[in-house]
Every structure is written in structure tokens, then in C-alpha cells.
Length: 313
Image (cartoon, rainbow, N blue to C red; front, side, top):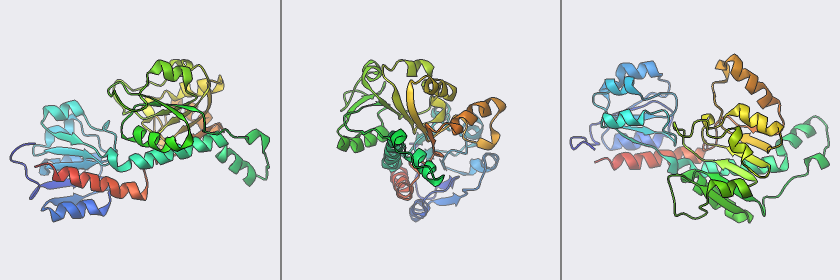
């Protein structure tokens, strides 16, 4: 951190909703905080030159245009986990520190992933919808128990570790692969996961390397049909390939908390051709990017960010 930077008297801009304790804590420390959860990217561009710190979620992309105008900017922090809305290389070039708060919502994501998995394996949503239509279907909804299953985790950061911790109580075998992390509990390799896993959960950041990583070839590498969960980033998965693998029986069922394009009112014609079979297939469970979106995680994220900003001295 620049030796001239001090928390007191700093001007900070918060562009998304966050627990009030963060603003209150920063102001108590002597910061001037502009809380603008309704601001858009164009408006940020107009005023960013005033600020020493920028706190964002997902609607503002902090790239060259913003960073070039942010002459006084010392840090950007993500209210959450993903850093794909920040040009990390250019921020580094501009000597702007970037950090996030995955510690704040890791438990929430893990619990949501578990909920999705149990739902898939026991046909809960399908059965619920059938009963509401006065259909009493039992045998077709016979479920599967987690006990004894082998679960593959791709990526082993905060959320995957939290998920693994929860899964321990289910008497499962956990195989985790992370290209940039090693010597950890549950460590495995892709070949073993392909060979043994019947459940796959994705916990990767979106990068140039991971974009479209989960494709038809990836699914075809599994020796057995799998249940598939993605609570990370939509663009890591080729959704069309998921549908193809599902239709071919390579995937038993899938749960997606994230999509390639989450602005559903702006889907292109080609995107709609994928979205329609996605929503009409009762073996696919969808939630609107709410893994990690709990009342508790909202507070925890604020606490984590407050602590990390206070450490910038």
C-alpha cells in the first residue's frame, strides 16, 4: 500500500448493497463513504476521480476506462468472491490493490450446494410440482442416498473447503482437484475424479483459463453418469454441452445457480435456443445466483471487508 494512504480522511465509494455495519464502521474510522447502491457504471466513470477506495459487487466492471480516471484510487474490493469484474493485470499496473471477501459467504455457498445436491438426488422439486398438480408419483421419484458416493470437487478454495466440511457427515468419499493448490486434505487429480466420481461440484473462479472449461469433452471423460452442480460462474460451463451430455445419459441431473448470461431479458436468439430446453427439462434445477446470498453472509461479508480495509495501513 502507498505509504501516503491512511484510512482516516479517505473517500470511499460503495456501488452495491451491503450490510450497514460496513459503512458505519468505515465512517467511525474517519472515512467519507458515499453509499450509492443504485449507481450505474456510467455514473461511476463520472465521479471515480474523487475516491481512494471502490467497493463493488457485479454490476460495475473495473477495467482500463475506470482505472485510468481513478487518479486517487488505492484499492478495489469485491463485496463477495468473484474477481472477474476487475481487470486484475491493469489494476496491478496502476498500483491498485484488489481483494475480495470469500470468507464471508463460503458457508452459505456450501449449504446451498448441499441443498441443490439433496434436491437432485431425491427429486424434491419434481415431486413437489407433481403433488401440486395432484399427481402422486412414488416409484419414479425413488431417490438416491449420499452415503457411499464419491464426490469430485473442481477447485478447492474457500467454498469447496466449506462444502467438503459439510459433506464429511454423509459418509462420502471426497476427491478434490485444484491446479494451483496442493498438499491438502482430499487432494486428488482429474483422472481419478473422472474414474471414480458420480457427483461433480464446480468451485472455480472465472478466468481466461477456466472459461468454457466444463464442456462435452469434460463430461465425456467420466466413466459413470454423474450428478452435476455449478455454484461458481456460469461462463465456466458450456450450457449447450451440458444439455447434450444430459440427453446422452452422461449426466443424471444438474443444478445450476449460475448461467452464461444471467440477464434473462437480454438473451440473444441463440441463447434462447439453449435456455428454453434448459428450463423445460425436469432434470435441471435452476436458482438465480443466490448461493452465498443469505442474511448471515451479508453481515459476514461486511465484517470481512471492514477488517481487510482496516488492515490497509
